Image (cartoon, rainbow, N blue to C red; front, side):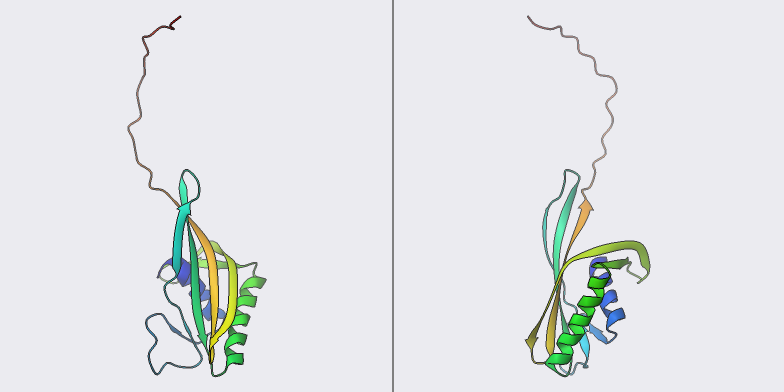
Length: 147
């Protein structure tokens, strides 16, 4: 998982500390729990030196009842909303990098018996690879102006 997904996963776990699954759900999974699949992403140019990746992550919150599932999902969403939709970015080892990411939108809804879906949407920006060129030395022009 990339650092954005790991950061969202960490934020959700701190708010709602339950069993977390990232691979396929086992048949005898624990309740309550959360499932984090891979995000959906689409890219687009951002500027002449960068591009953006728009991401969407639909996590599933499992509980014993519909009400408990949607309450847990809404509690996570409300807590993140109260922090101005900002969450700390963590590195691969789980340490805080000192950077933050902004969640653009969150949606929650019941999708099955005892299952709520909480969808996060955010945008990440990345620099294009810069190609190193040798700087040009002197440039002399030996042409006059034509009349």
